[in-house]
Length: 314
Image (cartoon, rainbow, N blue to C red; front, side):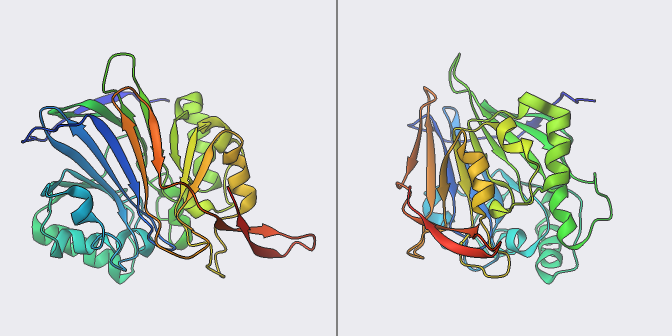
């Protein structure tokens, strides 16, 4: 049954903001995931959400101070699932940075890796509230321009271990409405694969439709075939080096399914230089992306069925 609970969370915002826009920065975290969402609010500082933290290779540490431009507060950290390439970088944010993290959302899934146990210790030591959110609409006091809708909060695959934790990823949608009759949506998908993709399509159907999507699991071909066409995004973003010879992400066959509706942007620059991608949504709902996408790596099966790395030129 579709749940449409509405929850209001009290988070105070302070200073004034000169611009009204939403910015999403997909950080080049190598073969890992890290993103920052900032939503300007007329009544205070931008509302900041950090989604995953990369693998701890200084991904957030090298980027966040400049991105937040002196704003000392991270209102929400979302850990999609407790794999090292998503959680490790959050330890710096919680324990060693100068930022104040107000709350953490996670799925309740645990992992035996050191990075996750260190993260659990860090949030307890700092007294940060960490909860598994309801599958609901969330409204934040003092931040009227957006709604956060949790579509999957984990535990559908209770007891999952190893790679199976991917399907328990926390999935949410940002609904940005800076003016009357202006609405832009962005879908964050963690590392979901076939099973969770099918559950989301069956439960929500066309409600998954989003203007912006973070492609699940670094462009893995473990995806429910109808998921990309149901989301039907105009802009699709993927975090992957394109060079990993074990996982071989992203897969061209998977990206082609998103490319049926969306323009693809990838942090896997073929020149192997750092490529952070910034999406800006203004108060009229116009979406812009910078920098322009350079050539990037994908993995494609040849006529013999062997995966080979090739360069895609946009």
